[in-house]
Length: 342
Image (cartoon, rainbow, N blue to C red; front, side, top):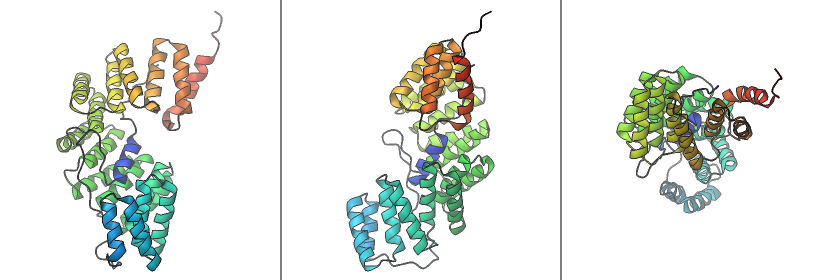
């Protein structure tokens, strides 16, 4: 039996990724939040002076010239081997290059050199989250919050970890505080909407996602969250209209076609839903949500061979949906059982 899931795909990843880049998630050309302030150390703490090669390296990093940044920071470290800021920014450079393990080592080194470096704890937490090490992420992000309780970037990362651990109420509180500290920030409002969605508080989710879209009208993921929230509230016609508006107004992601398909399924338009899922599949071939939705759609239609194929693809996915895995295995076992003679 097809199960309707209205939560937007990749909730935790979207939260983690946007927080990792300073809640600066980008979806759609020209659609980008302003950056959150970058303050790895509280202003009331003494730290090393930002001069010479350290200043050059940090400036190059902010200009996104990773090669020049690394060269200057390494020159500074040769003369100042205990420079926690140089190590920290080298970690950021590695993170920007997608070098997770070197970045981890650098952030750990930075915190050993300066235990007050909350930015290193925060980014280390993001890397743990991306690796699926949720408990470790929560621990270091709580350390970051103790050091910098009023940093919206830390709060956003901590809330993402709370979502991964199923701490819905705590995540809502953290996102609400982050939004208070950095108002009119589209991605933070979107993240808050996701937390409300996890608690199935659809009205609050809609209020948050509408604020996100006021700031970022072409924010494709926020459009998908709006559709999912409308469906969760039982407003299927409004959800269908919102899904079509999103496809017209922004550069769609797989999520936009996924939520459209789920609304169409709820309205009994399975053929149109399958077309939407195939479009999602083209945009994101390895998307676990698409694979599972297709499997369940085909299963409900009685197309056993294709349903089995898609269930198997879902179970082999590197990023499965843990809450669905056991149910899928049981359903697959039933489908493979030989029909009994009657």
